[in-house]
Length: 305
Ligand SMILES: [Zn+2]
Image (cartoon, rainbow, N blue to C red; front, side, top):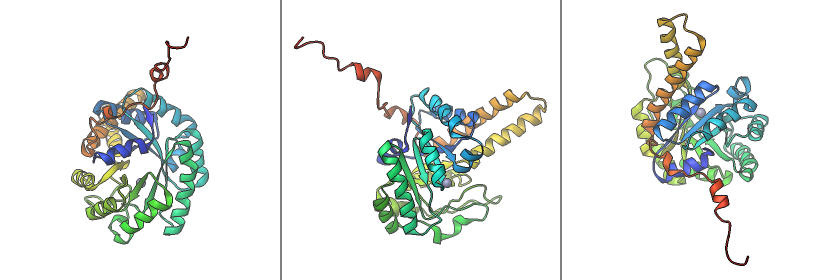
């Protein structure tokens, strides 16, 4: 079932669990993610980064494919433009059928962040698209931006940001960062930031840069109030490493078999991360918004004819 992040995250927030949000830019990743979610009976959010959409997974091709795959499973699947920064890219994703948009104006000051985020909310909400904003700033793992506590989300600012923008979910900064950390480094998360922002706003909260955080940190972040765990790099690494193993075993492996192996590796990685979020088995809680049967069940065959 194809849906938006608001539908998924409101349920997660109310029932104190998180949903896996994982990146995809080709068929193998999309099918691996949705297949894993289907097997775990878990809601799923598919992330497509602005650069991924622009350089490779053009929405004219990618959105219909994800929608087709989503409609083949009963679990809810949302698709969000991840870290949308440019207005023309955001409106491109909007026109092409993304169900949700993340606007990341976190590099700007508070007022400019509010103004840019609000503009996207005003575009999306009338058409039923959900919007995520970012307050505080989740930087890059390679430069250890997650250690910079000055970038962390401040609860009192979060209250104002949510009220002034009308976002449906909020990405917060509390110690994680995007990409691969230096070898052997495990980030220290400030769970109090999560608890305090949750207590102040009551909003669905997103943890970006989940890759490399360690299973224990992800579980604790969910306990503290995270409802959306973004993972890209770690699943990509699993796919790449499995492809390397396959080619080491058989350098002449045909290309289609290699792609099928990659999809299977993606599916296994997804199932692992779903198991950390508490979303396994939640798919059955979601009913389709519309059904053909609902439409025909109201025919009145009696009185007055
Ligand atoms: Zn992110």
